[in-house]
Image (cartoon, rainbow, N blue to C red; front, side, top):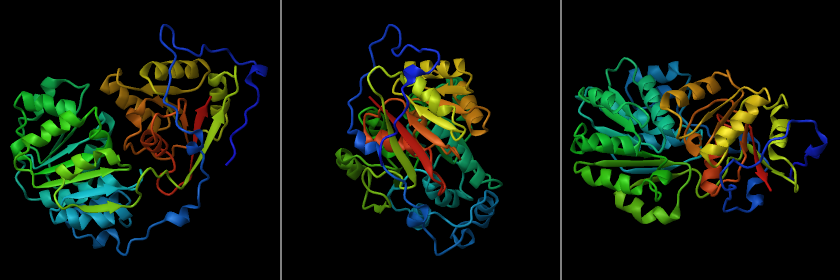
Amino acid sequence: MKEIQKKTVNQRSHKTFRHNAPGKKKYKANLLDANLFIKKARPVTETQYTSFRVINDLPVNQSIISNLLRKGYISPTEIQDKSIEPILNGLDLMGLAQTGTGKTGAYLIPLAHRLIDKHPSYQVLVITPTRELAVQIEQEFKSITTGLKLYSECLIGGTQVSKDLIKLRKPNHIIIGTPGRILDMIRQRAINLNHFSTLVLDEFDRLLDMGFSPDILQIVDGMNNRKQTILFSATEDKSQKVMINKLLDNPVEIRLKTGNVCGDNIDQEIIRLSEGENKMEVLLDLIKDPAFNRVLIFAETKRWVTKICKNLRNAGIDADEIHGDKSQNYRNNALQAFKRKKIKVLVATDVASRGLDITDVSHVINYHQPQSMEHYIHRIGRTGRAGKTGKAYTFVN
């Protein structure tokens, strides 16, 4: 696919924007080959999966089936179809599948079935790299288990520790959270890891990288009664193989997409900037196109996210931002506004690239080139979901 060629922005009458954040060094990335960001979408029918069974055929409680049907499920996705029995049977499992393929349901459906009629004594621990993904997983769990008296709590940073301590006085079947807050609760003896028999690492490639691996290993070391470990992600890092082997015992491996494979149903193009061309003006020129009706923009730093969002608003575009310096309530409200189409553009760091289920994102724009293919895959995976064709653009200097 050829690159997008933009008109010379210097000929336009747009307001001029300063390109560098004040008082900070210019952002620099370890640039990947720009050709990796160019790919023509293939027809969705080429990768469509058809299950041999429908939701009513799943070997789980009828109330769970009723809840799934109420949510609009017709048949399981491929990752769900191939994961349910191994998880029901208590086997360790590693699942690799593209974003938007139903990985969360793949483990929540069988785990929920196994928790029915069990005393709420913290049987399952689900760990995620981001707060937003943790909240989304708990919402999914509650919708799958409506009416079944299964109890959960979500433990994430940006919320009051005192409230979490109060919530944990009530027994729960499943705890979902981020590593830092889970460790906080362990240190304050609000959580006893010996109670948990099942561990789920959602987006395990991020959780096992150098940033999170010490926390994960500390948690795993405290789970003396761990009998089942489940890992799910869209990508895997070959350098983590030794650690994965230590976590899993004779696992079932389901690899629907191996390696760094991008969504086949996403048109991927680059926007190459000429010397002196104003990136912000080019971005505004793109977004003002009516076809860009729900846009997710990724920037590499929190400062850049804020700057881009401010410039978009100054140009009259409804936009908001999420990053680590924003409170959890702010992040939740911004995300909900984006989902409900109250704003056109959401600007984010990679906090929004992991597991978030946002339907009908028309375009993903990488304002900065991602520093790894793993980041790129997760970013563009926010578009082209549920069998639809998406569009992804990456700015290249």
